[in-house]
Image (cartoon, rainbow, N blue to C red; front, side):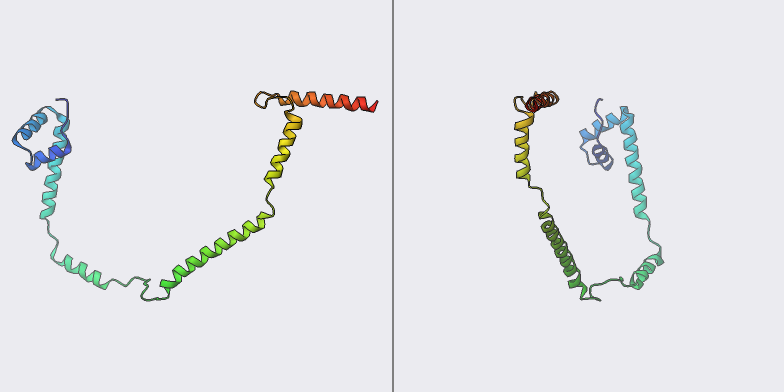
Length: 165
């Protein structure tokens, strides 16, 4: 057979829940498949273990001893009933801490507002510089900036030299 029985099907076979034809097919598969036989044997031993475990009884004095220990256990160390102010103090302190942290954040933002960089002015200066110096006649995607700067620097030097004469 090319398909193995599922654990659910083997468990149903063990419990007698399969129809007669399903049980016969599963038993036929177990006869030829060692893997499924091993799974079936494991399920059978687990079932036997559970049956035996369910028959064990608690020693007579154990239940009474456990009940005595539960009744004698000390009260929890922290109870809201013992400290009624804690029901209000904990949320109030949490809110106060959050408000304080929010105030610090706003105050820090106001201090740093004067130190912010004027991005619009920087971008405008960058555009002017790029248009005038770097990309006067070159495509930015294909420009060789080093060559462009070198040639413009040489032209500027020639102009300056001719003006000095």
